Length: 162
Image (cartoon, rainbow, N blue to C red; front, side, top):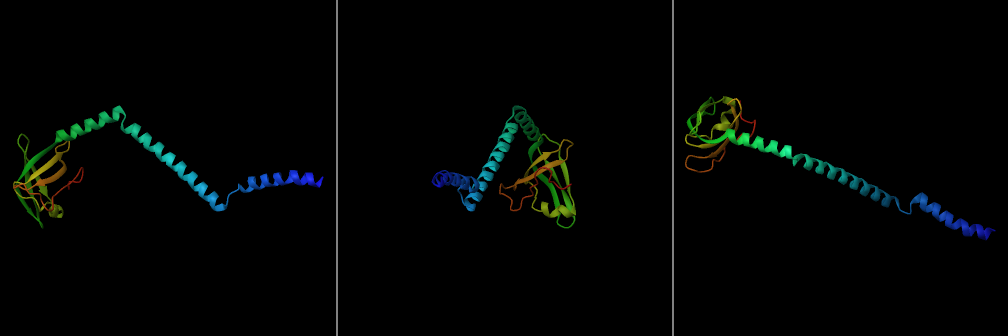
């Protein structure tokens, strides 16, 4: 009977050992758990990216972006700087003139004067107006002779000093 118990007991003990210890070392278990976590995080990131793409490429979102771009393009134009007199200490003013558009008189405060010192008469700028007629964007594109300015006065959306 002891032989039968040994014959039956050994496989049961092996199965119990495998079940308890999973047949892997602790390092292998940690590596498997880390890989499982990374896989789960990768799937979550993929789902987020797919959700973002569905929202971004939805027809109503595309239409809204196109309308916003058309509105931005309608308010944006290139112009010439004239009447420029800016002092690094006192500030100053300059005019933005474009054919078919109203002239814009821009005043530069003393604190912002250093940003606009590179402007000279005849320089070409690109401006975007806000809905109420103020400046939203200001890009110093080129000098009167066509050269690129070294330190251009560039202000993206909402960055123009008030």
